[in-house]
Image (cartoon, rainbow, N blue to C red):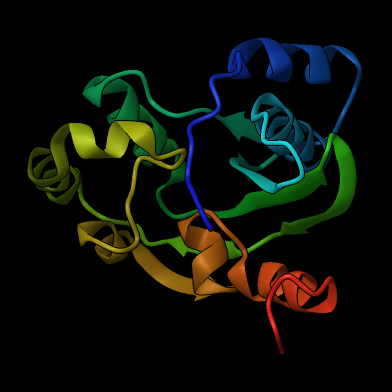
Length: 174
C-alpha cells in the first residue's frame, strides 16, 4: 500500500542551521529531505522524503513569499543558468537506506518585462509553491531556452534513480 503524507518541518530553521554549519546546497537539500522522511512515523514502512533547492551564481533561492517576490526572483534568473538540487532520501524505521541528489541545469531565456508580467498574471499564486517561481509542466516552460537533466527531477522527484533503488531493494519487482 502506498500513501502520501505531508511532513511539516521548519524548512527555514533547517536551512539556517545548514548555512551556519557551512553546508553546501546538495547537503542542505538532503538534510531537508531526510527531515521530512523522519517526520513520518509508519512502523515497518519505507518512507520517502524529498526536497528541492535552487542555486544560481552561488545564491540560494527560496520559494517566493508573494507575486512581487516571484517577479524579483525571475528577473534575477532571467538570462542565467541555474541548478535545481533535487534530493530524495529513503528511510525504514528511521534508518537511512538510500539517498540521491539530481542536479538538472536550466537556462532561462532573456524575456521582456512585459512577457514576465503576463506570465505572472497567468500563473498567479500557483507559482508561490515552486522554488523557482515557475512550473515547467505549465506556462513556465516558456521561460526557458535550454534544459538539461531528468524531467521528473525538475518536477521535484528523481523518479528514475528512485525506481532503480526500489527495484534493487526488492520493493518493486524488476
